[in-house]
Length: 221
Ligand SMILES: Cc1cc2nc3c(=O)[nH]c(=O)nc-3n(C[C@H](O)[C@H](O)[C@H](O)COP(=O)(O)O)c2cc1C
Image (tube, rainbow, N blue to C red):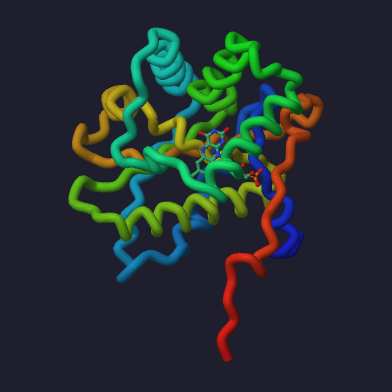
């Protein structure tokens, strides 16, 4: 695959094969994406790669928080508190289309809850990557994290692996920092679920549309 094909082929995967990713493949991806750019080359990312028992222990705890009704609280506001269009309708469409793929009806709150809980298990992917920033970092460093996350997802796609970027993996930051022994004051930005796509699970047939960039691009000459 060339880079155009890799970009177009990447999609969020929410069901993975029960197949481990070789540690050398994880290292190969990280070795590649260290070439990502960052403002003044500060390379602010701190990454935790979590597999095996460490992953099970952590995801059990995150899922339990959710099932106990603990209100998620990220280290920063990812989303606005008040949604306006066109973002409100795009967000709604995204959720509705996924539930439609899964044949989960609007009134079936238990199935919706079960599906959301899977987020806190990283959709049972064999590898979870967590992205932290030092507490001294400011808003700009979030750009650097976004760039390296996309680099990881593209590198993984090229290697035949699948990913799902997840804000939900940063919704119980205290649990993650405690279990992974990260500074309590560091900023947990997001996570990525990584593994081999389970192509037989219908959830992975769900695809999202994009607006024509003509609507959001102005050309000046
Ligand atoms: C930073 C970020 C956080 C996301 N968080 C979640 C999440 O918590 N759970 C989830 O199922 N998808 C999550 N997504 C995936 C988006 O829903 C997905 O990227 C979007 O719908 C476009 O679909 P695609 O990735 O298949 O192209 C996230 C994506 C990004 C970029």
